[in-house]
Length: 348
Image (tube, rainbow, N blue to C red; front, side, top):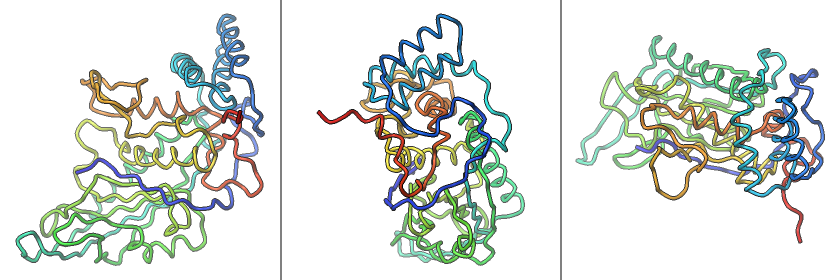
């Protein structure tokens, strides 16, 4: 079974989420003006020499988010941020963070039939019990904590959890499977929740194991659409949920955070127009000693570790600056220039 699948259906962004009137950090910019990477680097080194960690971090961040820098310059900036940024305080006040609207839909019951490879009819009924629901809600809460902490307290999930009591009877797939809770099939059940609220991310949980009948064949642990019309342009995460989540050794909320980072990767390049290479995929993890091509060469998970949260921290804190987190949106206001364009080298 695949860990995850990313699908990106490109839509024209409309509207924008609200920012707090009182930003948590005075260094956050309201406009995007290109700066010189060499000058920012010199400021950063001078600040480090003077022991001014805050000024050094800010200057290194500007190499990444306001300069048409070379990859070599960005690699150096990320290495310095990895060492220096943990020394700065995070915002601990959620009211000062930018809200990110999330709809969580828990489908109480799955009643589904298919024919297996031997042409035998299979019928299952899976019910999300009260204990299952508490477990899902716990994972969602842990996911929100990861988002807030790893964005330095700049992004806060505003989550609405809705339980769909009408049984789900259709999944996407053919023959003996695998089968997925595809967004176009879930849309009728989700539309009442989407009617009056614009969400940034929608997550749907459909139970696949336990109860009556065998486990439903699933092609992945979870999958993410970066932006899809079925949920009015929000990102969409579909979870063929199993009672074994989170997997042994993993952190609660890790699976949701992994999928959400796919959406974040997409919006920085496609909505905010930062260079695509700036934010790596959450699938880019490699173990120490892995010599396969690809992956993020700046991070390797120790083989003794059981979680990929180290990679996700590296992406969220070394590749994505505080300024970028403050700008994060699925819907850039009409007429506003995408800030990432200042990082693109001028045409020769």
